[in-house]
Image (tube, rainbow, N blue to C red):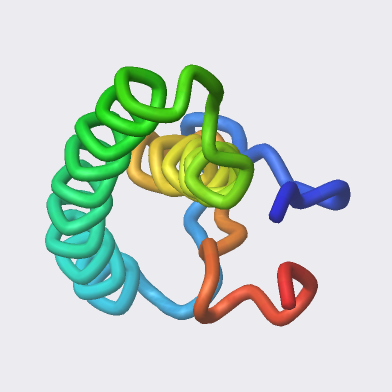
Amino acid sequence: MTNTEQHHYSETETPKGGTWKRGLHMLIFLILFGVAESLLALGAILQFFWYLFAGRRNELIADIGRDLSVWMKDVVDFQTGNTEVRPFPWDKSTQ
């Protein structure tokens, strides 16, 4: 899910598409980030109990956590203005 061709903007450069459109995307990603935090907490709890009862990690939970962490990093980069590349589901290169 990482973006290899990210464009970094200077402080004075205006992103394409306008400020209001970017603001709408930021609001959507803010909501989705909250959902991702809940999924992360659920995954951590499930992984703990998996360790507790099976004595080893669950590979599926670990893989989902790794993908989720990459997506969350991409969202943070977009939200803080480090990139104008919108994360999944808008960025088609992550599919």
